[in-house]
Every structure is written in C-alpha cells, then in structure tokens.
Amino acid sequence: MKKLFLIFATYFYIYIAMAQRVEPAFWWVNMKEPSLQLLVHQENIGTAQPSFDYAGVKLAKVTRVKSPNYLFIDLIISPQAKAGKFPIKFSKNGKTVFSYDYELKNREPNSALRQGFTSADAMYLIAPDRFANANPANDNVSGMPDLVERNGKDKRHGGDIQGITEHLDYIRDLGFSSLWICPLQKNNQKMGSYHGYAMTDLYKIDPRFGSNEDYRNLSKEAQKRGIKLVLDWVPNHCGSEHWWMSDLPTDDWLNFQQNIQITHHARESVQDPHASEYDKELHASGWFVTSMPDLNQRNPLMANYLIQNSIWWIEYADLHGIRVDTYPYSDKDFMARWSQRVMSEYPNFNMVGEEWSANPAIVAFWQRGKKNANGYVSSMPTMFDFPLQMALIDALNDDDKIYNTGLTKLYQTLSQDFLYPNAAQLVVMADNHDITRFYSQIHENFDLWKMGLTFIFTTRGLPQIYYGTEVLMTSPMAKNDDLIRKEMPGGWPDHPTNAFTEKGLTPQQVEAKRFLTKLLQWRKATPAVQTGQLKHFAARDGLYVYFRYNDKQKVMVVMNKNKEPLKLDLNKYAEMLKNAKSAKNVVTGETTSLADGLTVAATTAMILEIK
Image (tube, rainbow, N blue to C red):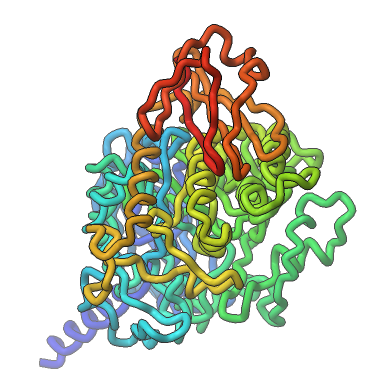
C-alpha cells in the first residue's frame, strides 16, 4: 500500500508540474530559423537539468537566472527533424522531477509564402469588446474581476470573437479584405482593460472573448471570405497583473524595474542627432502608466520571448498581417531585429507600425528601405500615415481662402512622399480606436464625410476604416476613448438600431453605408487605384485634382470644397487627359463628354474613369 501511495504521489507531483508553463507550448518543423528558446516556469526548476532524445533536435544551451523558478532552454531544430512529440525531462540528483511532452508540428502548406495585406486590400478595424456580443455566457468569467457593466465608464461590454465571426459576411460585403482587431489576448486586470493593451498572458486569448480555438476558427472563416486577419501585437509593455509580475526572472526583465519612471513621449529623440541620453532612455524605457510595465527588449531572453511569440501566432492562427502598437516606444535595435526575423520567415508577409507623428520624416525613419543618416536599418514593410490623417482633417475643416490651408494641406503632405522609401504601401485612415470619430471631427458634415472617404479610397496606400464609420458613428470632440469605442449598432439585442440589417438607421446612415460599399467594391476592381501611380495638381481656392493611373486605366479625382459648383479648365490637366474623350462618374454612373468640359457640384469629390 505504501508503495502504491509513493507511485501515486510521484505521478501526482509530475502532473502538477506539467500544469506549469512551458512557452511556447509547441513549435513547428522546417522553420527557416532553426533555434528555439523555451521559457520554463516551475517552482525550483532552476537547478534542474533538462534532457531529451529526439532525432534532429539538440540541446544547445541552458540559461539559469536569478529567480530559481525559471529555466531557459535553447534548442536547435535541424531541417531533418520530423513532426512529433518527445518528453523533455528535468532531473535533480538523477531523478526526474518534471516532464513535459514537447510537440513539433508540421507547418501548413506554403506557410512561409503566405501573402500579407497589400495596397489592393482595404482594412476594417474592430474594438472587439464593443463590436458584437454573440455569446453572453462568456461575458463574466470566474477569477476575472473586470466585469461587464455596459453603463460604466471604461467598463467591459461583452463583445466577443463569435460576434465578429458571425458578421464576417457583413465585413466582406462592405468591400473589406483585411481585418485588424484590437488585442484579444488575456487582460486579467482588476479594471479598465477592455481595450486589450494590458496583456497578462501573451499566449492565451482572453476567455471573455473566447478561446484560442475560436481565434483560429475566426481566421479560417475570414479566409473563406477573402479576408486577411491582422494581429494587434504589443511588444512594448504588458499588464501589471501579468503572470510573471509576481516572480520576475531577472533584475532587468522590465525597464525601470526598481524605480518606475513614466515616459515623456519625446518620440523625436529616437531620430534627433542632438538628443540627450536622458531623453532617449526616458522615452523608450519609461512606462506608459503604472498598470503597463515596460518590457526590456535589450534583455536577450525577453527579446527571444517576444520574437517567438509573434511568430507563434502567425503560424498557429494562420495570420496574414501584424499591426504593431506604440512602435517607437520599443527599443529600436530590438525592433530592427524583430522585423528582420519575421520578414525572413515570411517574405510576402506584411506588418504596419503605429508612429503617431505629424512629421513624415519621423514616420519614414521606420519603413523598410529607408537610408537613415544614423545608419539605422529597419525591415518594417509599412507604417500608418498619421501625417496624412491629420492633414485630411485640417483640409476638410480649414478655410481654403486662407493661404496654405484647406485642401492645400493634402497637396503639401503628399508632396513629402519623397521621404518614404515606399509611400504607396502606407496605411491611410481618417481615424482609429484612439482618435475622435471622423464624422465628429468634421462637425457631422455629410458632404465632407463623403469627400474624406473618397480621398481615403483613392489616394495612394491601403485604406483603413474604423468600425461604425459606415453608419456615421460619432464621439465627443474632447478625446474620450470609452466613447470613441462605443457599441456597434446592432451588436447587442437591446439596440434600437442595427447597422448590420439597417433596421432603424436614418436615411442618411443608409446612404453613407451604401456610398462606402459602392466605392470599396469599385476599388476592388480598379488596379489603377490599388497600385497605380499618383499625379496631382497644386490645390488652390478649394479645388484639388489628382489622377491614379497605370498603363490600362486612368482615374481622375476632383475635390471641390467650395459652396458653389466649379467648371474646370481642362487645359490645366492636358498632360494627363491627352486625347481622352469622356469620363464616367463612378458614383452616379453617368458618362460625360470631355468636349463639353467638366462641372463639379459644390462640396463634392467626384471620381471619374477617363476614357
């Protein structure tokens, strides 16, 4: 009986041990990079010696750290290694105290060659907690104190992955072919983490959104509809309740680990040749807030952890893009290493970074191919075009009669495209989940809303639209994140209006939705706008004219902000119109003879296919 008890106790101990963390929990064979570093977290595991016997895989290095509860194991996976499971045994004094069955999986066919989002796509942005609640059963989860309270400020509302999955047809039918969702990973904070940017587990989907399998299913269902899924990845910080915060591996796992300092947001210090070391350090290493510890990517163990995490999600969920949060706040050398590693594994992949600056020179610094004065080399394919977003708002709101204002702002901003190595790949937008709603910024002027969307859908780059823009959602002019991320009409059963079915929408909201859909569906079939050249003519007196063109197509866009119609002098545009005879209005379908000239209605943006 005593012997049986000892056997049971031994297996029970190993079972408990196996319930602890090994991250990443599994990996894949035939990756371009053969090295893999495992983080093992288990009580007093630091003095154990790992061992295994599996063909094609060897133990390269074991790293022990200050905390006795961690072990970092470096493996080398050769090209000859086959998919399968093998036990990694952890021994002390010749006895196994912990065993983990590690699995190497086969990659999906052509995984390395997956095609990321391109300028031929259009991107839809969703804040998942506020989009649609299809599964009320997961609104509140035992052990997670941040409860659903739909009327409270910065509270959870219950939107989930199932709600997004059930509305993929809606997203596709609008004309979108890529989907960026704010972070879905676990945010087990005490309060105020509905937004997803205070992660407490980088490998787990928050159970209030669903499961890891739900996320994989979302990706599969999106691909069936021609929609590419984009991960919102946060390398700069985690949540203050992250599982490792109660047992940090090293003294430098976090920046300012012993004495928290808050960043002063001097993002220009990264590029500034005169910047003090103080400003560089406080910007990149300072915390956003005390609930978001800043991760020290200069620690090689942390760097490996983050790089592998992003690649794990790409493979696991079959992703086609990554959006990187707070790009310039991370260590710039780490970001160079990370972007190079991801693009080396997936040469056709795409990633877009958030550099919230009005200065094109600052944004351009991070894009792949930029020859920077300080020698910095990035492999980041593209960035969000915040300079153009800010210029668009000014262009629509300003008085065009004042010198260098109004539509001139668009012309001037685009004229700085020479700063970018590839301006045609930038992601352009009118707003996002951090910015006052576009319709509110232009003071709910429907004509200007249509003009702004026309520009977003026809200028160079990939257009990104925030959920609810299609039905003229608003928010206060004073920045209020909670109200910027209001519930999508129709996402909850008690809503009186429904964007998905159009029930209860005003005639103007219906018109807006159909206008957006018509332009996006037209854009999908118009290569000249997706990938063609851009030529524009200097904006003046509330008039801005530009062309998108390739060898087979030519599109003319005329933006008239004046309160009266304008008849164009077509001789000004002879170098582009040449011998063209007619122009078809994309919105109305009417064809006009160019011999009679062109008249543009007041406060209108007109898209013309030139014949």
